Length: 247
Image (cartoon, rainbow, N blue to C red):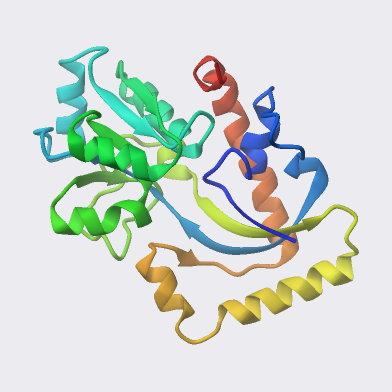
């Protein structure tokens, strides 16, 4: 059984199976080799800038970037990550010419953000929230349809005027999967056990500190989410294929 998150290309079916290429280190296809068991929680991404960038709002950042075509840049968590896809969608819908700087994960990108090597980053809010609160960086907008309870001062991309796209409509989740051909009674039993475990005292509070919203549903409902999200992101991957391909 595997716990997968939809923020990395190595794990999420929408990324893993629709990129049209494979990493040699990844030898499975989640769409074909795994079956959804349980969704654990939903999280969102944020657009954050360093303190050298004068923008205080999403629109100010868009205007600032338009004044520097091809010169403004953003950090991503690597080629094919959802961090990259969110950044590409943002640049496309906002009409921006931005340069992506891919990193191997969050930490090195955040280090360069603070150092001023990159102007912005698209990262999970769990990675950004404490630094936003301390004032060492600023989150200008978050994905999703509503503001986060832990970041009530940060608007959504939709509130900033970027509506009707993945920035405002998509959700990112953590989920548990099992090997294909696992019998349905076992899937349902695992789902019940996981949901019961996620209702343990204190876990909701821990999720809240990580800006994760718990969401417990049946295996069938989770499977429907995986299918819909795979279709949603497939079109994004195809549109931006040339930027996603590893070189």
